[in-house]
Amino acid sequence: MALDIFSVQHILKSHNQLRMNKPLEISIAEWQEIMEVPEIKESWGIQNDETPEQFADMVYGVKFKFSPGMAPGYVGDLYILQGDALGEPMSVIRKDGRLILAD
Image 1 (tube, one colour):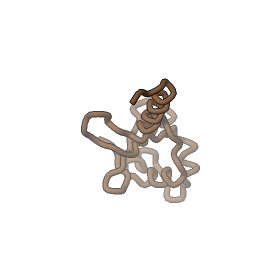
Image 2: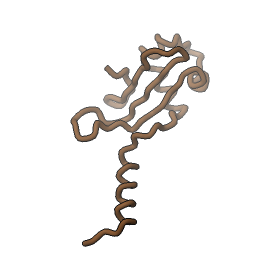
Image 3: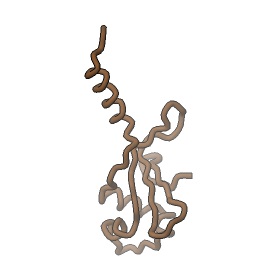
């Protein structure tokens, strides 16, 4: 079976969409979950009355659908958080259904 150029382009475009290596917006529900990670709560000094919207306003955050490619490893949501001062960002992943700080 011969493929024309349009079929090949469609296949490649579909493959790139599946990789999901593009940044995604973090939802308010996800911000709430992130705030509950003990290391995040302590690092940012999050108080019990702070809302996810307030936290999202003071943190740079992005979500990826992470996949290690051909190598074995973690597959799933990856959240990268950066405060308002440059330094090492914090990474959060999902393990056993809950968010944890990535090692």
